[in-house]
Amino acid sequence: MATILRDLSYRYQWLYDGISRVAAIAVGGESRFRTLALQGLDITPNTAILDMCCGSGQTTRFLVERSQNVTGLDASPRSIQLAQNNVSQAKFVEGWAENMPFPDAQFDVVHTSVALHEMKPEQLRQILQEAHRVLKPGGTFALIDFHAPTNPLFMPGLATFFWLFETETAWHLIRIDLPQWLKEAGFETVDCTLHAGGSLQTLQAHKKP
Image (cartoon, rainbow, N blue to C red; front, side, top):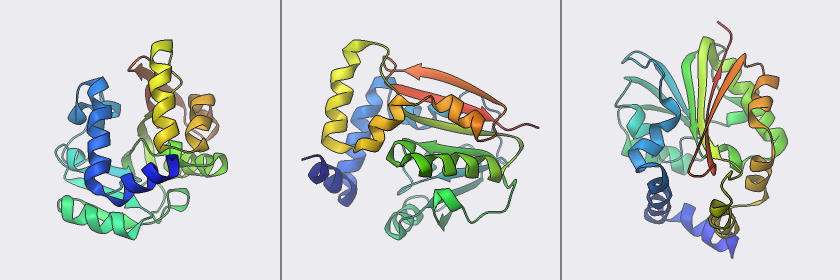
């Protein structure tokens, strides 16, 4: 059942977007959800932002409101095509997050939204290292993803969502110490904030200046 609903959510954009909007209610709506990890960052029209694992541009469309220098990256040609249609203000590149086609120190901010839980452990470690590599000194890797709820009332809802739409990689993510993994990937400091009863985490990992 999980595979069926998961496949349908990726095959039909309206279904995926609908699920995302419902999930975002827990933190105040889609706009806030999509930019929650960026809170407190100094972003100007010239800030070079990478929207890693951008999908069809759901988050990218909010990033271009803040910067005129936004690049989206995704491994799916279909997603890249949809993103180009949905967010013409951004540049889009097809590529894998664990081996990004960018030179070292290109971006001020790398951002990713609920994508890391899709990755197997070795992939995840490679992606964290790549995010560190493509950031400029002093840059920030900002992300939002699932977390093990600190409020037990949120656990049944998260477990049901995982059962219907996710795989074992999502369970793996909420079991690991992601801030520690980011430090092991080279980041100097990591700020973590929990939301929605602890079922979501936003992290800002800072590269040494």
